[in-house]
Image (cartoon, rainbow over all chains, first blue to last red):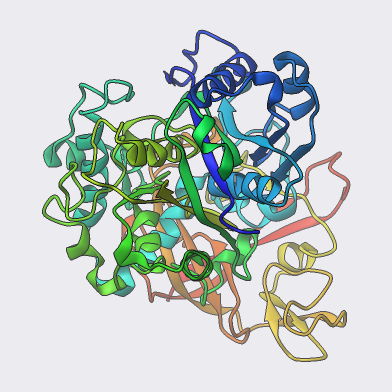
Length: 386
Length: 146
């Protein structure tokens, strides 16, 4: 039953600097879903499923009422931190559609942090913190940036990777965002000097190693492949998707044998086997970059290069522009376009197969999304031109 | 003793699985009596053999810095005076495969390196009233470079 589903339509709200959204989070969410249905040419009432990830606040029942859904046949969500399961949301939509449980399933993410407070922000006025945080917070380890910094520092130490490799990731995202008028960093180019002069957030991350926080929503409609001829827009075929988890959870991720790893090798193994292709076959890739360092780890674990080669792999503009040696984060990614918890990367991966990117890779046939790493479990998605 | 990140900074909520670490005044790690594997954080079941005979064992109190991140941006207002500070991952001698989060108290943040050998020290602090374990004393493990 696999390889039956397509991304039939994509939709976005406007993207805003955190706290400056002109609509509520729920309104942004409905806007993105309506746009995705309209893009596909599917009546919104015929959407019959919703999938999201990581404690999505906009629940399917409220959405169904607001959007006039006739019959909600499918709703699901994955457990995971951060944006790591953006691709997993599409995977679950694929599973529902390919198995025939639903016909038009929307996978989405929406956030308005001005309305709800900052995601991942340390909170609390109490004197104590419990559970896994009890092992970390008393020592000042609180934020995703700090946790990713510990993994990145060890990875860089073990493989002789310099700060320049982190700079290269950020430079590529900013360079590609300058081609994308929708990007929140459009018109704000980055130089290596500006990168190195920026303040430290947590070493080895400068300010420009960290993606900004944004408000907005993005969504895709997943439908059965045979609908393709009826659609308004060019579909993208879901060739494979994968979730993966190593034996790590919370602070257990810092045990010596797992430090500096993200277990994306597990995700890659599943993805490449299911797709029947390998890293060398990919024409364009979108990598989730909450912070630059983990991108280096995921590039290696997904099989694009060895850790000792990764600095050379990303250097000398190798990731910048449509003619890059490795076309990467062509919309600007989380860092340059907007951070919609990585779901905006799925929209861009689809655009590449339609020939609609502002940084269009010529004849792109295989388009990859790696939704992490950062926190396990991770996920990835491989789309093919229909 | 004064706490490294300030006496107002948050404390652990004590439970059955972290009480030995935060109150015993010793460096301990959870081990499985059935298979001998160590694990961190402690849990109700051994992740290696799924046995439930999990116990706490004393370690030597020494270890090695496995990673370090120097925090410059305070992510909570109560840490404004504490930055910059270094967060470290320390592997524990005598508990193979186990490491913990901590701070190195006797070095400037940028002088803490991966591979640095460290010895435990303890921040003694009363458990706050009304948090469910009144009268207990916290002995929060910390580290000094040797």
